[in-house]
View: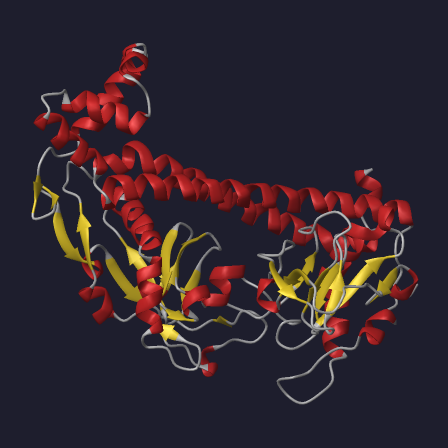
Length: 442
């Protein structure tokens, strides 16, 4: 059947001109992922696409279509209508109970995407596919009961990915709050100093501060937990020198780890047929390896090779969206220029530098903006040598292992699980869309 038999393309929706309504821009559409990154309110000017929860949005313009920018709308309130880019195609299920999820996953199907890309028209760099061409896409689709089951199976995988992403947001907030309190504002150190000045117990004061418990609650804790809390409190100095904790030091950001820039790969390095190792650029850091990723079979120095669990920092690009520290879980690859691989001598140093770069993001963005050209900015080695940070001594660095390491590992495990879930989803998607394996799963 043709898709027009199960899909309403660009259905008529109404928003009063001049009224503010949820707006989704092209940048908010994920690549090879389901959920919209963000939504903001914007006045409707009379043009653009209009959609509701349950609709699928497909980017129709190059390179967004090729890059897999497709989403299922699930971020609006009940009965609310949103609007967005004119470069979206809106696809509404004629029978939502059976096809709402199925249509989204069909739009991710490589057969459908190849069909859409092959029908793009227009001048080079501004090619688009017309919705009428998609409506004519014809294939053998499973029966509606099977389509409903297909969509449900794939939805469960994306729902778990979404849950993990939400968990990671909360873990990030917790880690940054703790990191700022201990290593930026030095609150436990200052609390110790104040306790000593007032003749109070500095250890107990810090134990109460970092645990959020009263003296009585601490006294009732199991002995092992109370000792661990006391040992943690003892790792903080009880003096300040030159406005930083005594024994800690002021370092250039560049000296907190070894920062190795990626290689400058040329078109002649790329292999045909996706042979060899993937070349990891900023797009891969954000969205993983895709059909747009370049590969190479050539040999390059070890310093450009990256592996799972490596820490990377993108130092060039659009300041607000590209300057970021990443944990890499996409397998073996070769690192492109404009990205640092960050080598550390211990897990404690790795975790400290990771959260330090997270904390410094506003500073680094502002630094990049000052050298911005044509919308792009960068942070140079000279900048990183100029920016000074406080680095804890060997005693205090143990604080990382006691508290922040567990948060860091929990976040990493969520990301690793998401990689596995996405691989499973993408592997079974073509078979479910075609109905090939559904009988075995029911």
